[in-house]
Length: 118
Image (cartoon, rainbow, N blue to C red; front, side, top):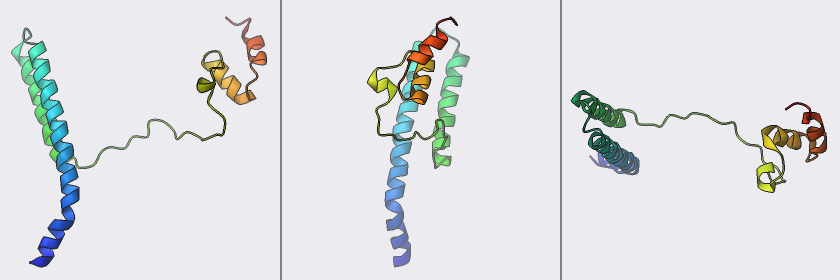
């Protein structure tokens, strides 16, 4: 019996974090669905019904899907000792910033090469 209680005690912090995630997301989903149905009162009841159906599906997924999906949207940035171009306020446009980063800050060759293009 004490082994069973020990395993419950060990699972407690993980369960608490899981329930907190479910509770705040459920409250947010229900509030958004409620606000949408209030805003769309003049629309068809079919639309408002689908809003609530989608909210219920999300609530069911909260219990089933236990881990977040990890999507690497942006590549990891490289750390450098110098400030970025955006921070220093230099560069002209995105291509100018790329050229400045590649040449170490000299924009004269970039401006000379792009004067006749536009």
